[in-house]
Length: 138
Image (tube, rainbow, N blue to C red; front, side, top):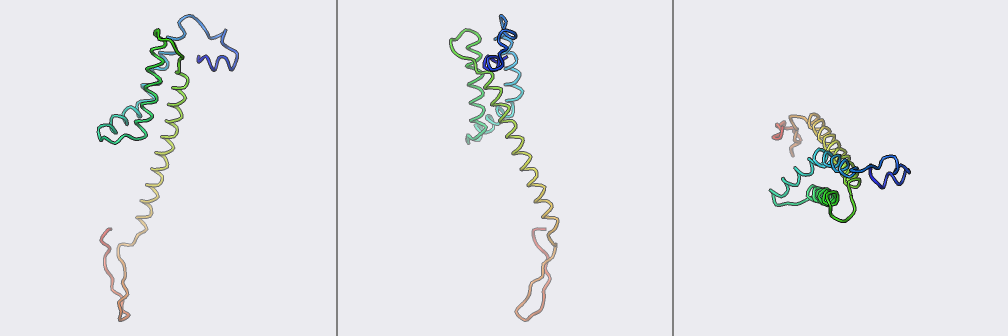
């Protein structure tokens, strides 16, 4: 329903109707709160620690896009950025999922490496004898 996409595909006459801005607002509200929830929760966590980071940046971007576009739907002069909001949330969720998947994979690989470590080590003394001692980190 985004005007940009309707112009691109030439379907503006088919999908445009009176009040379509309110429908886009409703859809964007669902996307903002459901899809943006991990970033909004991350914003809260980062601000509580007083260490703003990537979640703060993403939450700020999606919040500004949502609030500004909502104000435009309800009377403010300007452009609506609901399409950009949805695209940003989708791309950031995809990146977040890829990052979490790689972190979990690395953690699993480290756990497997730890299983390969011996529980005892041998130390070669100066006289040539071997002394067995337990490893402290196992």
